[in-house]
Length: 485
Image (cartoon, rainbow, N blue to C red; front, side, top):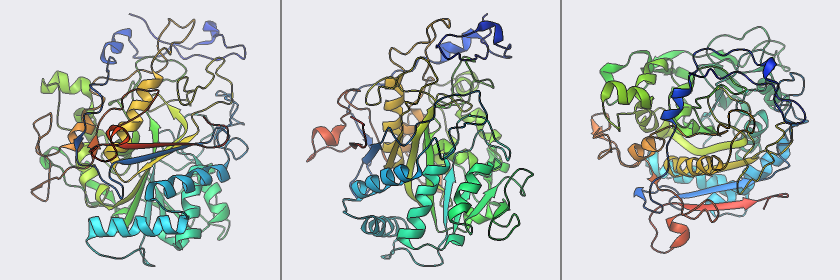
């Protein structure tokens, strides 16, 4: 049995093992559950969604994220403006939205976004109307009020880019925008960066404002930081199995729209290398898992999304996954206007430092760790299954030929087994691999989107790329910006 320690990176790219404190509860045999490989390419299942069905757009600007990578230094964090460029983030968002909607301006893009959503989900022909509240779900798995570490979380700059678009382009009043993660405290730099430009934007978190969180510069108080007001708001296919997992914030339930601003990130990694903490419950974080921060009783879900637990207790290879219900919920997934993946600084598990991506299209330098090359990208879609399918293919591609020299020769990135099960369940919720018939309001859930794997990591082509006229799956558009290739 090998206990995997927490590492300390040296500037020359070697590792001083004498400085590694011991890590608890880490066994080498956990790695046996991290052997996932993708199935056949270009075999779509499910029904593609979107103005252009199944379209996923990725913009990449290497200059947007340029943190020096000093992961164990708490005064030069990746989330500072000097290390991450908000204007370049907004440029990536603008380019992505226009390509996603087939328009030539941000204003036209947002008009089509609201019209499409309202027609498809609300069955009304209208755009955004004043008084409608928009909630932005961000991923803050490693956040607290006094965050100074470099563990990965939602970036203030990409979040700001979304808020700028909503206020300056769409015309949404600041007070009708909510940024939330109801399982965490929202770290000070996130709040400060948004309030510097938009002091009436609201934040909803796990409780009242904490010491360390900033005072609102407009009011001199913590006005705008709100505790979640818990109400029942989620129904599960197997409703009797959950209690607090049914609770969401009243503020989010009352919102008209939701933007799912998740991260391009895995959720599990078996070794304790730099990071500590448990190895995680499921393969990917991204869009569906992002809603684990939208409910109060998240731990109640862990047994059902953990592939090891599914094998051990359900004795099946494919099991019921409550994340499908969150994505189908009228109060969460169904009110989602837009799905985004923040890929500025990506990670290999829930508790992780930013990770360099060594393979195409990123080709980041990986040794030494302390270097300024990062994935630095943004992905967008109307189809949450297609978006996460692309995200999963990207993450698997980065796991190839990617081992830590001098550290027991272990991979930097590993994919947990059953990694794409959640996507297959979402794509075909009424005839799933697990045999579950997912329901909301007593009715079977229709397809939540389309799933497939690309042809290869070099060409990155899906069925609609290969056959634009007859393809039924994903269309992937990659837009290099700045010095990207």
